[in-house]
Image (tube, rainbow, N blue to C red; front, side):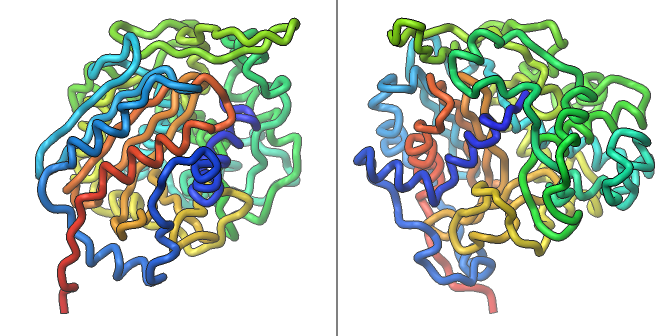
Length: 412
């Protein structure tokens, strides 16, 4: 489950902060998109990806691995121009399963939007209506739509799952789990962060509640709904919502470790490949690069949602970003960057991408694509720490994956 420390983990990976880390580490990174014209819509519209991905450049992104705090990686880049894949590290194969962390949120949002299309859930309906008693009586109404686009204003995780926030604590508690109701109850013991609908703050509690809503409305488990609505129709062979007590990963899988400081001050590497999968609908799923590629392709092509709900995937609310560095990327810095399911970012070369990142101890993953699916990337890196120090490598992979861009005259 996502602790406050793990929430901060991706926050520290925001481009604005991580480029400083990269500079200190001596890693070359492109200029921020913020240095380009601030009309992001017209800039992104002017960019088209042409030709195959640059395989030689992508290979160079993995050439120094494993090293330092990263034990392995896999990358899959595809699109109309062709496909490239590569791996690094012992035991990492192109077909390896891995923990996808908060990429799980895209599956959850998709199921909720399907239920909305079936008129079984009203996105303007409230959590208080569907799940009475879950939120404190003092809280204002929070809509289902606000859960999906992180404008609910609900507080983040409390102290139940945080421990002391170290790799040592996680290694000792990697099999621990709590029910979604316990996690939500722990969080809402705190005051609201802001009035619902007035700002956006990325928050895993929103997705815990969305998963609970799926189960309440359907009368079936969240895992079953994902299986019958997404996994089975798309033929995703490697994708699963694990059972609560299923700590193992099916083979082949990418192994994961964290570096732990012992009582004597000596660092040792602890295997955390087996860990609790009970971030559940918020971050507990397992998948592979091929499956995530297929899922994102189907989602962006409209195979999973009718047009009205498909539009929600690209509708980023016009509200400010609230204490959340996920959205501090490029010309839209300070503004919301999440729709009802996806994250949007404009890269330094002007290419706009849609997708999602995810982190679990030992795993940092992401899936991104241009809206027209001209280029897609899935990556999974195996870091040994929880500080986000691997971000320079992530940033290098993502920007290189989308760097063969050519600019064409804008229509009209």
